[in-house]
Image (tube, rainbow, N blue to C red):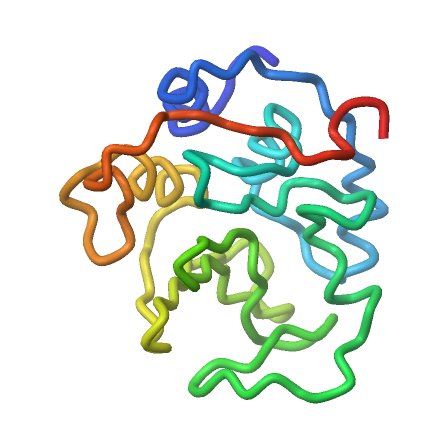
Length: 175
């Protein structure tokens, strides 16, 4: 795992997590959802897998199983369309948001994805009030700021003094 993205490295240092080698067939994943995923998100997935940061941010970094799995929305169609306001939920080949993390307080962290503009991934964040905020930064920078930057409002959780931990999902070990 040499040459990690700077922000991925910072998250590893912040949490004290020893990167595990989660192998992911990215070609199959990206074919399934019909978009390439951000390189730093792939690094996060390979270093952490799916799990929970600071006991409160659920990271969807797994591509298998039923916990912390980024791909579940495409594999289990929702019976009722989700009303999301100004951004629709992404459907393969279209434009919309893809959720990659959420918090126990109801915040969602997503990308705004457009199949016609692969490689462009502004981060969208939505708090419990439902308003979307757009950030022009990488997935790993946004996640680091949420976890470690006390001044990152309104989504930062560092101000709560939570332990800088990572807890892998139940399928991370031999699942």
